[in-house]
Amino acid sequence: MPAAGEHHPAFEEYCECIFELAEDDVEIIQARMADRLQVSRPAVSEMIRKLETEGLVTNDGAIMLTESGLALAQQVVRRHRLAERFLTDILKLSWAEAHHEAGRWEHVMSDNVELAMNRLLGEPTTCPHGNPIPGSDYVEPGSSPLSQHPIGESFTVRRIPEELEFTPGLLEFLEESSLRPGCSGVVTGSSPDGTLTIEIDGRHVGVGAFASERIMVTS
Image 1 (tube, one colour):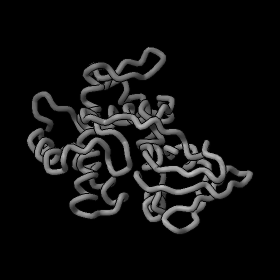
Image 2 (spheres, helix red, strand yellow):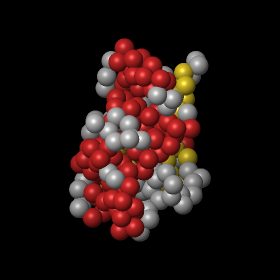
Image 3 (cartoon, helix red, strand yellow):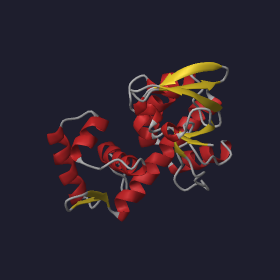
Image 4 (tube, one colour):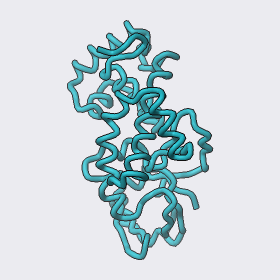
């Protein structure tokens, strides 16, 4: 059972989900949450009622985190993203492996371990995918979707939104294709279905519309 002042992992999962949907400017509706969490819509409805009772969310036509819910979400997200950094930077796991493993660590990490991990990693401001770590000194780089960059324009990858992390197989594809924060490339072509062809790390890669509309880059 959770200790005093702590919350059940299910509550943490839901608050984290709401936070990340808002972060990616995705409409926070129960259907979206069900898809993200891979549960039924009735299960989401029941949990939202429990979160309201706990004072973690409000649901007056729109689902929103309360002050307490936001604090809980930020703690879970911070620990998840620090864990991802540790697992990729120190243990050299793949993005997909780190994302899966961090989903466990976020619920069991203590305050002391969080502080020690942050210190060991040099107080990073983002996870390996470029998403900001809550409470860090992150500064938004003024990025825009890859899909908005015309043919012939160069770009530098800045952020892979959480929405893409939950798309099966996509993290593996992005990492293998060098579509990682800090890597630079150039748009070399586009097709009617919205697929972009880019040259990055010495090879040509096709990026579908779903991903190119969400991958954030700078010129």
